[in-house]
Length: 206
Image (cartoon, rainbow, N blue to C red; front, side, top):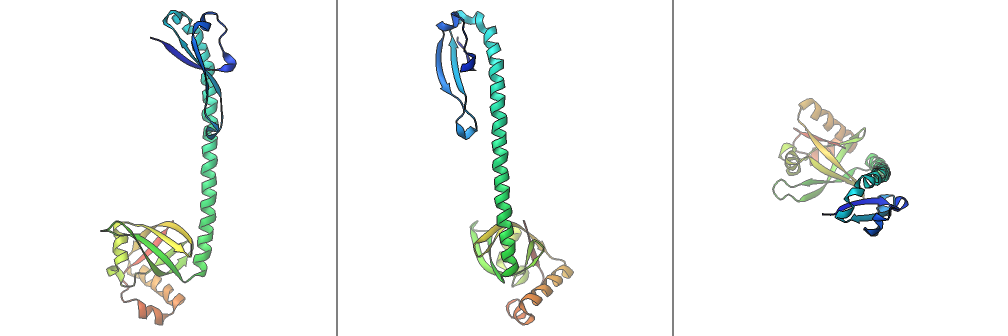
């Protein structure tokens, strides 16, 4: 049975006994791991088992090297997460700007039976950061039924898009307030023309 230990080349053993051991030079984590370290792989034959205490000393030193690589790797991961959050904030800001200017968006929901994405143009009103949607046939609207099954939706404002969680609104006073906002934005005549039932609404939250 052989004992193996990885140690940095800067801490190569000087013992004559260890010269009998089989050694190979390996490369540590590549640049994707944010650091690199040349490592000496030492395989000792059974006759050198007495040298294990000294090897354990090298192992402790190597542990410091490995711990440093781990910490550097974590810094790299945190930087990537921060970059993604920054990109997400920029896209969210762009989407909000477009929602404030446009009258129509593309809504995508997941079909409750097919499991596939279904898209359609819809009207909306924006309150703060969240768009409110009004199903044209109220609770009988197909996309609304799909939302009840799967609340994950996507909103696309001419190329700027984001995922939202849909929250059904059924309280009469809350629905009435949203209907009034639709009438203010699109005109009472058009709302009456295209919408046939006003018993539910939907809040899209990031």
